[in-house]
Length: 310
Image 1 (tube, one colour):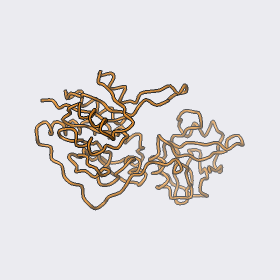
Image 2: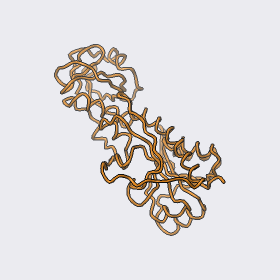
Image 3: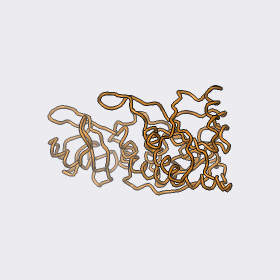
Image 4: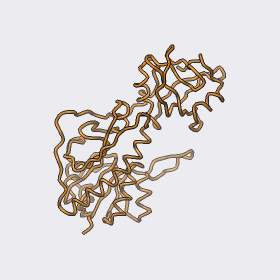
């Protein structure tokens, strides 16, 4: 029999899993998502990607500000769910909520646990220079991403791959993995293995203060930071354009050869000298503008070899 599922998620990353569970024929009895937020130039209240998708499927959507307390627990239990599927929901689940579904709660996590437990596993894996990662289905428990792992799908991280690129790949990979997990749960054959006690790292939330580029560092470390912060919040530096310092967001780079004073433009291809080595800008974005190829930006901004980025 199809499972009765409560789906809990909010951003774009969650949507492929919601769609895949719906397509697999499971009964999604409720969706929990963060409430609509102001967005766009008019700052109109805008539903989350998950809410918009659920409403398209005519699934009731709930967005409580907290899941603590008897009232919230009773409302959750009233769904009589076999399982809750949690994908980047945005609220901590109290023990009473974790225990409410017959088979508990399954979480889709964007790293190979126990590496990169926490809020920003995709970004931190790239920023650390990891060459591989995974998406995993974990049975949730009280601790932060400490539960046993039920299914895992590994994948390499490309040398120039950004968080945006990897995010989209893991979202698709994870959707199929969660459907497989639900199928195994339905058949009574979903086994979960405790995480190793060694190798634990924490993917703390991205702080915007990390986003300014320090050209005095090693090219590889700068490259990893730039692609880890792309597209959001976006690593940035300052370029002098028309005699005025302007913030420049850097979205894509690739490692290059060359040397010079850190931050110096070495050639017309926008190769930038770093403290050790060099990297070439591939895609950038001026304040208020759209992402453009770096060489087109250079021509429009009038930058030349010998100029410096700060």
